[in-house]
Figure 1: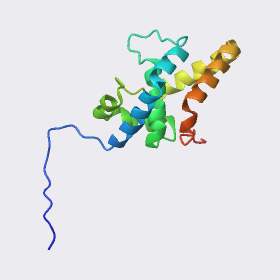
Figure 2 (figure 1 turned 45 degrees about the horizontal axis):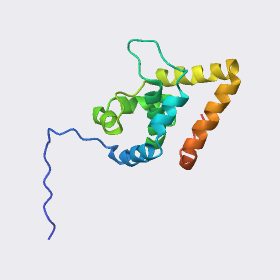
Figure 3 (figure 1 turned 90 degrees about the vertical axis):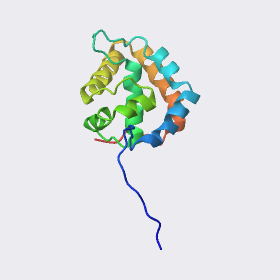
Figure 4 (figure 1 turned 90 degrees about the horizontal axis):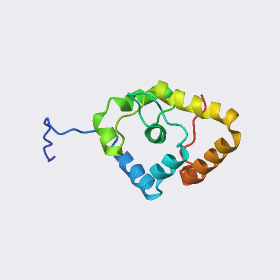
Length: 138
C-alpha cells in the first residue's frame, strides 16, 4: 500500500539551512561582497584572530534571512560548519563581533558623519531589493 522509506546514516555533511544558497547567488549577482569591501575599507580590524568586516556584514545579512532576531541568535549558525562553506564565509562572527562592528560604525558616524552617511546610503541602495530583510525591533 505505502512505499517503504529507508533511513540511514551518512558521512556527508548536511545542513538544514541549504535554501540560503539562493540568497548567496543573489548577493553574487549584485556584487554585494565587492561593494561591501569598498564601503567598509576604513573599518579594518587589527586582531590576529580577526573575521573580516565584509564577512561579518554578510553573516549578518544571512542571519537575518535565516530568522535571527537578536545578536545572540547568530551563535546557532556558527555551529554549522557546512553553512559557512556553503555561503563562502570562512566563519561566522559571534554576537559580540556583530555588536562591535555596529558600535564602530556608530562611532564613525559621529566622527566622520559625511563618509558614514555616504556608506549607509550606498549599502541601502545595494540591498534595497532586499527590503524583506528588515531589522527586527528589539
